[in-house]
Length: 351
Ligand SMILES: C[S@@+](CC[C@H](N)C(=O)[O-])C[C@H]1O[C@@H](n2cnc3c(N)ncnc32)[C@H](O)[C@@H]1O
Image (cartoon, rainbow, N blue to C red; front, side, top):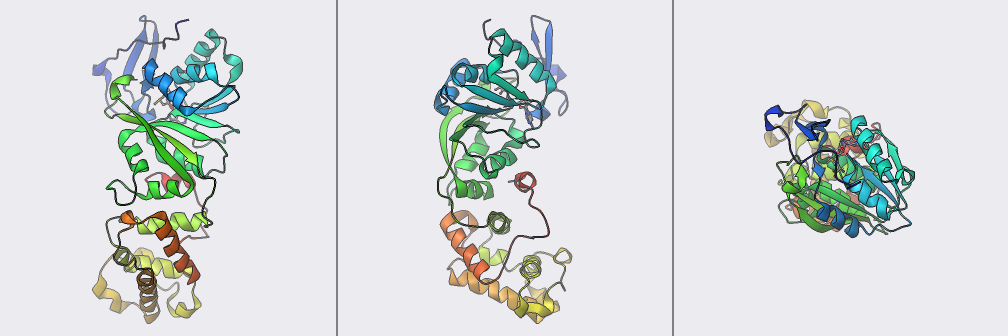
Protein backbone atom coordinates (compact mmCIF):
# COMPACT_ATOMS: atom_id res chain seq x y z
CA UNK A 1 0.00 0.00 0.00
CA UNK A 2 2.56 2.52 -1.08
CA UNK A 3 0.02 5.02 -2.47
CA UNK A 4 1.92 4.79 -5.74
CA UNK A 5 -0.30 5.30 -8.82
CA UNK A 6 -1.05 2.17 -10.92
CA UNK A 7 1.48 2.92 -13.61
CA UNK A 8 5.09 3.86 -14.06
CA UNK A 9 6.28 7.17 -15.35
CA UNK A 10 6.59 5.75 -18.86
CA UNK A 11 4.64 5.98 -22.07
CA UNK A 12 5.02 5.05 -25.66
CA UNK A 13 5.59 8.22 -27.71
CA UNK A 14 5.08 6.30 -30.96
CA UNK A 15 1.47 5.62 -30.08
CA UNK A 16 0.59 9.30 -29.94
CA UNK A 17 -1.55 9.95 -32.99
CA UNK A 18 -3.34 13.06 -31.96
CA UNK A 19 -6.77 13.60 -30.59
CA UNK A 20 -8.32 10.27 -29.63
CA UNK A 21 -5.61 7.92 -28.49
CA UNK A 22 -2.59 9.36 -26.83
CA UNK A 23 -0.40 7.26 -24.62
CA UNK A 24 -0.17 3.98 -22.85
CA UNK A 25 1.01 3.74 -19.28
CA UNK A 26 1.83 0.43 -17.67
CA UNK A 27 2.18 -1.09 -14.26
CA UNK A 28 4.44 -4.10 -14.07
CA UNK A 29 3.54 -4.76 -17.72
CA UNK A 30 0.04 -5.78 -16.53
CA UNK A 31 -2.38 -2.99 -15.78
CA UNK A 32 -2.80 -0.88 -18.87
CA UNK A 33 -4.50 2.44 -18.86
CA UNK A 34 -4.80 4.53 -21.95
CA UNK A 35 -4.74 8.24 -21.27
CA UNK A 36 -6.70 10.53 -23.57
CA UNK A 37 -5.53 14.02 -24.46
CA UNK A 38 -9.07 14.90 -25.48
CA UNK A 39 -10.11 14.39 -21.85
CA UNK A 40 -7.16 16.29 -20.44
CA UNK A 41 -5.78 13.16 -18.81
CA UNK A 42 -2.46 14.39 -17.46
CA UNK A 43 -1.98 12.95 -13.99
CA UNK A 44 -0.19 14.94 -11.31
CA UNK A 45 2.41 12.62 -9.83
CA UNK A 46 4.77 14.79 -7.77
CA UNK A 47 3.87 14.10 -4.10
CA UNK A 48 5.46 17.35 -2.96
CA UNK A 49 3.17 19.37 -5.24
CA UNK A 50 0.13 17.28 -4.28
CA UNK A 51 0.89 17.99 -0.60
CA UNK A 52 1.32 21.73 -1.27
CA UNK A 53 -2.02 21.88 -3.05
CA UNK A 54 -3.81 20.14 -0.18
CA UNK A 55 -2.08 22.38 2.38
CA UNK A 56 -2.80 25.62 0.51
CA UNK A 57 -6.47 24.68 0.05
CA UNK A 58 -6.95 24.94 3.85
CA UNK A 59 -8.97 21.70 3.96
CA UNK A 60 -9.77 20.57 7.49
CA UNK A 61 -11.31 17.52 9.22
CA UNK A 62 -14.87 18.89 9.07
CA UNK A 63 -14.84 19.66 5.33
CA UNK A 64 -16.62 18.14 2.37
CA UNK A 65 -14.40 18.59 -0.66
CA UNK A 66 -15.60 18.59 -4.26
CA UNK A 67 -12.94 17.23 -6.62
CA UNK A 68 -13.51 17.51 -10.37
CA UNK A 69 -11.62 14.95 -12.45
CA UNK A 70 -10.01 12.76 -9.74
CA UNK A 71 -8.46 10.49 -12.39
CA UNK A 72 -6.65 7.61 -10.72
CA UNK A 73 -6.84 9.33 -7.34
CA UNK A 74 -3.42 10.88 -6.66
CA UNK A 75 -4.98 14.02 -5.19
CA UNK A 76 -8.08 12.23 -3.90
CA UNK A 77 -6.05 9.98 -1.58
CA UNK A 78 -4.29 13.00 -0.07
CA UNK A 79 -7.61 14.82 0.38
CA UNK A 80 -9.27 11.78 1.97
CA UNK A 81 -6.54 11.73 4.61
CA UNK A 82 -7.51 15.19 5.90
CA UNK A 83 -11.12 15.88 4.85
CA UNK A 84 -14.35 14.60 6.34
CA UNK A 85 -15.64 13.64 2.91
CA UNK A 86 -14.67 13.89 -0.76
CA UNK A 87 -17.18 14.02 -3.59
CA UNK A 88 -15.35 13.20 -6.82
CA UNK A 89 -16.88 13.89 -10.23
CA UNK A 90 -15.17 11.86 -12.98
CA UNK A 91 -16.45 11.29 -16.52
CA UNK A 92 -14.27 8.27 -17.35
CA UNK A 93 -15.49 4.89 -16.00
CA UNK A 94 -12.05 3.32 -16.32
CA UNK A 95 -10.60 6.01 -14.05
CA UNK A 96 -13.41 5.42 -11.57
CA UNK A 97 -12.53 1.71 -11.42
CA UNK A 98 -8.86 2.43 -10.65
CA UNK A 99 -9.85 5.12 -8.15
CA UNK A 100 -12.27 2.81 -6.33
CA UNK A 101 -9.63 0.09 -6.13
CA UNK A 102 -6.93 2.37 -4.74
CA UNK A 103 -9.22 4.05 -2.22
CA UNK A 104 -10.50 0.73 -0.86
CA UNK A 105 -6.92 -0.55 -0.59
CA UNK A 106 -6.37 2.37 1.78
CA UNK A 107 -9.61 1.68 3.68
CA UNK A 108 -10.94 5.14 2.89
CA UNK A 109 -14.04 4.12 0.87
CA UNK A 110 -16.53 5.42 3.39
CA UNK A 111 -15.32 8.97 3.01
CA UNK A 112 -15.59 8.98 -0.80
CA UNK A 113 -18.61 9.52 -3.06
CA UNK A 114 -17.97 9.17 -6.77
CA UNK A 115 -20.26 10.72 -9.37
CA UNK A 116 -19.38 9.19 -12.73
CA UNK A 117 -20.64 12.01 -14.96
CA UNK A 118 -19.54 15.01 -16.98
CA UNK A 119 -18.93 17.78 -14.41
CA UNK A 120 -20.52 20.35 -16.70
CA UNK A 121 -23.73 18.34 -17.02
CA UNK A 122 -24.37 17.25 -13.47
CA UNK A 123 -25.56 18.96 -10.31
CA UNK A 124 -23.09 19.18 -7.45
CA UNK A 125 -24.15 18.32 -3.90
CA UNK A 126 -23.25 20.82 -1.14
CA UNK A 127 -19.54 21.22 -0.50
CA UNK A 128 -17.20 23.44 1.56
CA UNK A 129 -14.22 23.53 -0.77
CA UNK A 130 -13.20 22.62 -4.28
CA UNK A 131 -9.72 21.16 -4.72
CA UNK A 132 -8.91 19.79 -8.15
CA UNK A 133 -6.50 19.24 -10.99
CA UNK A 134 -9.19 19.79 -13.61
CA UNK A 135 -9.19 18.89 -17.31
CA UNK A 136 -7.95 22.15 -18.83
CA UNK A 137 -10.40 21.99 -21.74
CA UNK A 138 -13.33 22.79 -19.46
CA UNK A 139 -11.65 25.50 -17.35
CA UNK A 140 -13.86 28.45 -18.42
CA UNK A 141 -17.30 26.85 -18.18
CA UNK A 142 -16.36 24.99 -15.00
CA UNK A 143 -15.18 28.14 -13.22
CA UNK A 144 -18.31 29.95 -14.44
CA UNK A 145 -20.45 27.10 -13.09
CA UNK A 146 -18.69 27.29 -9.71
CA UNK A 147 -18.82 31.05 -9.25
CA UNK A 148 -22.23 31.75 -10.83
CA UNK A 149 -23.94 28.48 -9.95
CA UNK A 150 -25.39 29.68 -6.64
CA UNK A 151 -23.06 27.49 -4.54
CA UNK A 152 -21.71 28.60 -1.19
CA UNK A 153 -18.17 27.47 -0.53
CA UNK A 154 -15.02 28.80 1.16
CA UNK A 155 -12.70 28.53 -1.81
CA UNK A 156 -11.78 26.64 -4.96
CA UNK A 157 -8.11 25.65 -5.25
CA UNK A 158 -7.60 24.74 -8.89
CA UNK A 159 -4.71 23.64 -11.03
CA UNK A 160 -4.99 25.44 -14.36
CA UNK A 161 -2.98 25.90 -17.51
CA UNK A 162 -0.49 28.68 -16.66
CA UNK A 163 -1.59 31.02 -19.49
CA UNK A 164 -5.22 30.56 -18.53
CA UNK A 165 -4.41 31.28 -14.87
CA UNK A 166 -2.55 34.43 -15.92
CA UNK A 167 -5.61 35.63 -17.84
CA UNK A 168 -7.80 34.98 -14.83
CA UNK A 169 -5.39 36.84 -12.55
CA UNK A 170 -4.93 39.78 -14.94
CA UNK A 171 -6.04 43.29 -14.04
CA UNK A 172 -7.37 46.09 -16.26
CA UNK A 173 -4.57 47.33 -18.48
CA UNK A 174 -2.68 44.00 -18.48
CA UNK A 175 -2.41 42.52 -21.97
CA UNK A 176 -4.08 39.25 -20.83
CA UNK A 177 -7.10 40.98 -19.30
CA UNK A 178 -10.25 39.58 -20.92
CA UNK A 179 -13.97 38.99 -20.50
CA UNK A 180 -13.52 35.90 -18.33
CA UNK A 181 -11.47 37.85 -15.77
CA UNK A 182 -14.00 40.70 -15.83
CA UNK A 183 -16.89 38.33 -15.21
CA UNK A 184 -15.24 36.16 -12.56
CA UNK A 185 -13.89 39.21 -10.71
CA UNK A 186 -17.39 40.61 -10.42
CA UNK A 187 -18.22 37.88 -7.91
CA UNK A 188 -14.89 36.40 -6.77
CA UNK A 189 -11.33 37.16 -5.73
CA UNK A 190 -8.48 35.18 -7.25
CA UNK A 191 -5.01 34.56 -5.79
CA UNK A 192 -1.99 32.93 -7.35
CA UNK A 193 -0.70 30.08 -5.18
CA UNK A 194 2.20 28.53 -7.12
CA UNK A 195 3.49 27.47 -10.49
CA UNK A 196 3.78 23.78 -11.37
CA UNK A 197 6.18 22.41 -13.97
CA UNK A 198 4.92 20.28 -16.84
CA UNK A 199 7.45 17.66 -15.67
CA UNK A 200 5.29 16.98 -12.58
CA UNK A 201 2.64 15.29 -14.77
CA UNK A 202 2.34 11.94 -16.53
CA UNK A 203 2.28 12.10 -19.48
CA UNK A 204 4.18 15.38 -19.69
CA UNK A 205 1.89 18.00 -21.27
CA UNK A 206 3.07 20.79 -23.60
CA UNK A 207 2.16 23.54 -21.14
CA UNK A 208 3.12 24.57 -17.61
CA UNK A 209 0.48 24.99 -14.91
CA UNK A 210 -0.42 27.24 -12.00
CA UNK A 211 -2.49 26.76 -8.90
CA UNK A 212 -4.98 29.53 -8.11
CA UNK A 213 -7.41 29.99 -5.27
CA UNK A 214 -10.84 31.47 -5.99
CA UNK A 215 -12.98 32.90 -3.17
CA UNK A 216 -16.51 34.16 -3.62
CA UNK A 217 -16.94 37.80 -2.55
CA UNK A 218 -19.23 38.36 0.40
CA UNK A 219 -20.73 41.42 -1.29
CA UNK A 220 -21.56 41.34 -4.97
CA UNK A 221 -22.70 44.42 -6.96
CA UNK A 222 -26.44 44.62 -7.45
CA UNK A 223 -26.62 43.94 -11.18
CA UNK A 224 -28.75 41.70 -13.40
CA UNK A 225 -26.21 38.99 -14.30
CA UNK A 226 -27.82 38.22 -17.66
CA UNK A 227 -27.49 41.88 -18.60
CA UNK A 228 -23.92 41.98 -17.30
CA UNK A 229 -22.79 38.91 -19.28
CA UNK A 230 -24.40 40.18 -22.47
CA UNK A 231 -22.95 43.66 -21.90
CA UNK A 232 -19.38 42.39 -21.32
CA UNK A 233 -19.77 40.17 -24.40
CA UNK A 234 -20.54 43.27 -26.44
CA UNK A 235 -17.75 45.37 -24.92
CA UNK A 236 -15.09 42.64 -25.19
CA UNK A 237 -16.28 41.33 -28.59
CA UNK A 238 -13.25 43.13 -30.01
CA UNK A 239 -11.37 43.97 -26.87
CA UNK A 240 -8.81 46.23 -28.52
CA UNK A 241 -11.42 48.44 -30.19
CA UNK A 242 -12.53 51.56 -28.40
CA UNK A 243 -16.04 51.41 -26.99
CA UNK A 244 -16.94 54.21 -29.42
CA UNK A 245 -15.98 51.98 -32.36
CA UNK A 246 -17.81 48.96 -30.92
CA UNK A 247 -21.04 50.85 -30.31
CA UNK A 248 -20.95 52.45 -33.77
CA UNK A 249 -21.02 49.09 -35.61
CA UNK A 250 -24.18 48.94 -37.67
CA UNK A 251 -24.81 45.33 -36.78
CA UNK A 252 -24.46 46.02 -33.06
CA UNK A 253 -26.65 49.15 -33.23
CA UNK A 254 -29.43 47.26 -35.04
CA UNK A 255 -29.18 44.35 -32.60
CA UNK A 256 -29.39 46.59 -29.54
CA UNK A 257 -32.25 48.59 -31.05
CA UNK A 258 -34.25 45.41 -31.59
CA UNK A 259 -33.50 44.18 -28.06
CA UNK A 260 -34.20 47.46 -26.33
CA UNK A 261 -37.73 48.02 -27.71
CA UNK A 262 -37.55 51.76 -27.17
CA UNK A 263 -40.72 53.47 -28.32
CA UNK A 264 -38.98 56.69 -29.37
CA UNK A 265 -37.19 54.78 -32.13
CA UNK A 266 -40.26 52.74 -33.06
CA UNK A 267 -40.15 53.21 -36.78
CA UNK A 268 -37.00 51.11 -37.15
CA UNK A 269 -37.49 48.46 -34.49
CA UNK A 270 -37.45 45.01 -36.06
CA UNK A 271 -36.89 46.51 -39.48
CA UNK A 272 -33.18 45.75 -39.68
CA UNK A 273 -32.15 42.20 -39.08
CA UNK A 274 -28.73 42.52 -37.45
CA UNK A 275 -27.63 39.27 -39.15
CA UNK A 276 -27.91 40.94 -42.55
CA UNK A 277 -25.62 43.79 -41.59
CA UNK A 278 -21.87 43.82 -41.56
CA UNK A 279 -19.74 45.24 -38.78
CA UNK A 280 -18.35 48.60 -39.82
CA UNK A 281 -19.17 50.34 -43.10
CA UNK A 282 -19.71 53.78 -41.59
CA UNK A 283 -20.56 55.19 -45.03
CA UNK A 284 -23.51 52.90 -45.63
CA UNK A 285 -25.58 54.30 -42.76
CA UNK A 286 -27.55 56.16 -45.44
CA UNK A 287 -29.47 52.92 -46.23
CA UNK A 288 -30.88 52.80 -42.75
CA UNK A 289 -33.84 54.72 -41.33
CA UNK A 290 -33.61 57.80 -39.15
CA UNK A 291 -34.68 55.78 -36.07
CA UNK A 292 -31.65 53.53 -36.16
CA UNK A 293 -29.34 56.47 -36.83
CA UNK A 294 -30.64 58.45 -33.89
CA UNK A 295 -30.39 55.31 -31.74
CA UNK A 296 -26.71 55.14 -32.65
CA UNK A 297 -26.34 58.79 -31.60
CA UNK A 298 -28.02 57.91 -28.31
CA UNK A 299 -25.48 55.11 -27.67
CA UNK A 300 -22.57 57.41 -28.44
CA UNK A 301 -24.04 60.19 -26.30
CA UNK A 302 -24.16 57.81 -23.32
CA UNK A 303 -20.56 56.73 -23.89
CA UNK A 304 -19.52 60.39 -24.04
CA UNK A 305 -21.45 61.29 -20.91
CA UNK A 306 -19.55 58.52 -19.07
CA UNK A 307 -16.25 59.78 -20.54
CA UNK A 308 -15.63 56.32 -22.01
CA UNK A 309 -16.05 56.77 -25.78
CA UNK A 310 -12.31 56.58 -26.48
CA UNK A 311 -11.56 53.91 -23.90
CA UNK A 312 -10.79 50.26 -24.62
CA UNK A 313 -12.71 47.73 -22.50
CA UNK A 314 -9.53 45.94 -21.46
CA UNK A 315 -8.42 49.05 -19.58
CA UNK A 316 -11.64 49.56 -17.62
CA UNK A 317 -12.32 48.52 -14.04
CA UNK A 318 -15.48 46.65 -13.16
CA UNK A 319 -16.66 49.82 -11.41
CA UNK A 320 -16.45 51.78 -14.69
CA UNK A 321 -18.14 48.99 -16.66
CA UNK A 322 -20.94 48.72 -14.07
CA UNK A 323 -21.46 52.48 -14.24
CA UNK A 324 -21.69 52.38 -18.03
CA UNK A 325 -24.16 49.50 -17.97
CA UNK A 326 -26.32 51.37 -15.46
CA UNK A 327 -26.39 54.42 -17.78
CA UNK A 328 -27.44 52.26 -20.74
CA UNK A 329 -30.12 50.46 -18.71
CA UNK A 330 -31.47 53.74 -17.28
CA UNK A 331 -31.90 54.93 -20.88
CA UNK A 332 -33.90 51.74 -21.64
CA UNK A 333 -31.07 50.10 -23.60
CA UNK A 334 -30.83 46.33 -22.98
CA UNK A 335 -28.16 43.79 -23.90
CA UNK A 336 -29.71 40.47 -22.92
CA UNK A 337 -32.15 38.76 -25.27
CA UNK A 338 -34.92 37.66 -22.92
CA UNK A 339 -36.33 35.25 -25.49
CA UNK A 340 -33.13 33.17 -25.23
CA UNK A 341 -32.42 31.31 -21.97
CA UNK A 342 -28.86 31.80 -20.70
CA UNK A 343 -26.65 28.73 -20.90
CA UNK A 344 -23.71 29.52 -18.59
CA UNK A 345 -21.57 26.72 -20.04
CA UNK A 346 -22.05 27.86 -23.62
CA UNK A 347 -21.65 31.49 -22.75
CA UNK A 348 -18.22 30.89 -21.20
CA UNK A 349 -17.02 28.11 -23.48
CA UNK A 350 -14.84 30.49 -25.48
CA UNK A 351 -13.92 33.11 -22.88
C1 LIG B 1 -5.87 16.53 -15.53
S1 LIG B 1 -6.59 14.95 -15.19
C2 LIG B 1 -6.40 14.96 -13.44
C3 LIG B 1 -6.38 13.64 -12.79
C4 LIG B 1 -6.06 13.66 -11.30
N1 LIG B 1 -6.83 14.64 -10.59
C5 LIG B 1 -4.59 13.94 -11.06
O1 LIG B 1 -4.25 15.03 -10.66
O2 LIG B 1 -3.78 13.02 -11.28
C6 LIG B 1 -8.30 15.34 -15.46
C7 LIG B 1 -9.33 14.27 -15.15
O3 LIG B 1 -10.62 14.82 -15.45
C8 LIG B 1 -11.41 13.84 -16.13
N2 LIG B 1 -12.40 14.59 -16.95
C9 LIG B 1 -12.25 15.07 -18.21
N3 LIG B 1 -13.35 15.74 -18.59
C10 LIG B 1 -14.21 15.69 -17.54
C11 LIG B 1 -15.52 16.19 -17.32
N4 LIG B 1 -16.14 16.90 -18.28
N5 LIG B 1 -16.12 15.94 -16.15
C12 LIG B 1 -15.48 15.21 -15.19
N6 LIG B 1 -14.25 14.72 -15.33
C13 LIG B 1 -13.61 14.95 -16.49
C14 LIG B 1 -10.42 13.04 -16.92
O4 LIG B 1 -10.93 11.77 -17.25
C15 LIG B 1 -9.22 13.02 -15.97
O5 LIG B 1 -9.32 11.91 -15.13
